[in-house]
Length: 77
Image 1 (tube, rainbow, N blue to C red):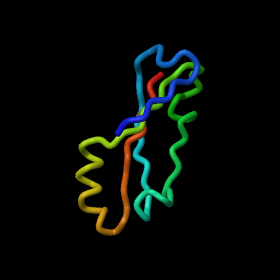
Image 2: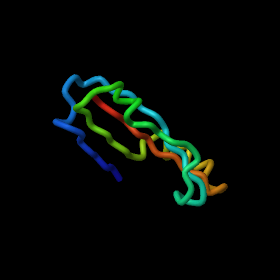
Image 3: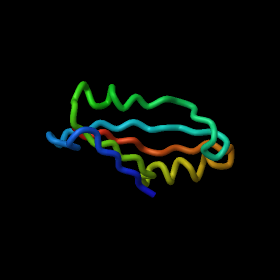
Image 4: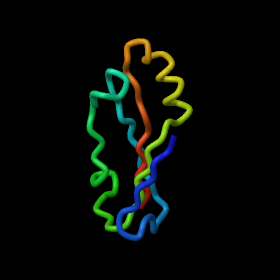
C-alpha cells in the first residue's frame, strides 16, 4: 500500500529524506510524529510518499505481536 501527496508542483530537485512512523494498537495510536515540513527543509514544492517498505514488513513481523507497526514516510524535494 502506497500513498503519494504532492505539495506545490511536486518534487523538483530529487533529493529525499525518510523517517519511520510508528503506531500502536494496529495503527490506531501514533507513537511518534513525522514532521513533513521539516523533512522538506523549507522547500515549496515536494512530494510525500508513505508506504510499507521491506524493512517495515520485517519489523512489523516481530513487533506486530505487541500490536506495534511501522511505515516509512519519504519526502522528496
